Amino acid sequence: MNFNKDFIWGCATSSYQIEGAASEDGKIPSIWDVYADEQGRIRDGKNGRIACDHYHRYKEDVKLIKDLGVNAYRFSISWPRCFSYTNERGILKPVINEKGFDFYDRLIDELLENGIDPWITLYHWDLPAILETQGGWRNRDIHNWIADYSAEVAKRFSDRVTKFFTLNEMPCIIGGYMGWMAPGFQVSEKEHINIVHNMLLSHGNMTKAVRANAKQNVLIGCAQNGLGNYPATDSKEDYDAFIKAMNCVEANPQAYAPLEGSKCFDANSLIYYLDAIHFGKYPEKAFEIFKDKMPEIKDGDMELISTPTDIQGINIYEGRPIAAGSALGVKDDGWHVADFPCGMDITGAKWPITPKSMNYYFKFISDRYKKPIYVSENGMSNADIVSRDGKCHDPQRIEFTERYLEELSKGIESGADVRGYFHWSLMDNMEWSNGYKERFGLVHVDFETQKRTPKDSYYWYKDLINSFRK
Ligand code: PNW
Image 1 (cartoon, rainbow, N blue to C red):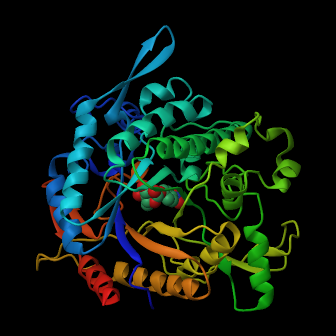
Image 2: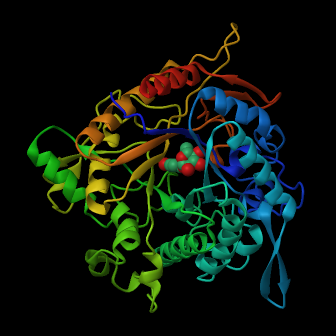
């Protein structure tokens, strides 16, 4: 593999997954606090009240990031840590929580002092619970609530921070309204599609708010996810089938419904979201297929949604092989999802290991939207243990990352404009509904003692990064 000298190497985390301090210094509950504490919906009844205790141990963690040798660190700001709300006769008014902002001030300064570029994610799923009582993502007003918060973040930090992601993984926010993420219930498909519209309006309004309040030139974009599909074989037929599948506006096979029984709604394809953002219109076909389920589009909506961005973040974990021809029982669009081989390599979370997700998929996105791409997340969970020698040996993660980066390098060679890679995650953390059972870190965390142990993959990644700097 080959990456040029300017390529950005990073690692990533998110607030609720690592910070803990769930009700400290004026932080109000997020929908994840409610989902965990009140509803007990996280595996083994766990929660994020302490998580990695990063709120108190951030200096130690920044040292780990520095020693890893990355140039960039992607983390998210907790909205309910920085904003609370008063409810005056049904009207919510934001109140700034200085102590919350102070934490990120300290974190950002610590990162900069250690030569690490901070990349902020404005929203990584921890919605203030009080906003969910007003409908959360179902309420169109959210695009104003979240823009107010984003403006404040930009005012305070854009003197030192120049990279901003708006929303993390819109299809997973929808998961909250399919039942497998907070707030944790199922709504109709028409409502799902309306939530997508509200998220896209939010993304546009956040972009506008950050730009308007930025103290210098900043790079803004969303961090989107989906399945990184690829042609099943090297044949031209399968390549054409792959392109057809990518141009499909129905979800299958571009999105997932991770919990059995949870319904994957249809308008969840990559192009459904990204065409709206980059071209200012939903794909024509969406109107044919979803008809009256399409959202009400008010004057100015598509302009707001397509407020110009600078970068496109893509979180990528897995994909599906696409082959020519129709599968049995499926309508003939000239493509189908090919079977995985028996004994397919899988991760700890049983996700398929599909390095080719890094190649054709990125070329497709790059050719279609012509924006610099950053891999804003990639990594795997593994049943890592600390051995009696005191080390944490994780050859699977090294193999996984090497395979994925090799394919990414091929994608870049074929013309995909990918400029950076953020490994998910810096350290083991609270893996949402799966609690502490999935370890995604380059650093092992003993959640009883909070001891951090860099894994073999941490040292491997460090060497790899160094090898491309020479
Ligand atoms: C992403 N799925 O989420 C998130 O951005 C991270 O916070 C998370 O820890 C990471 O990937 C690993 O899961 C996903 O079920 C959550 O397919 C679930 C799925 C995919 C991505």
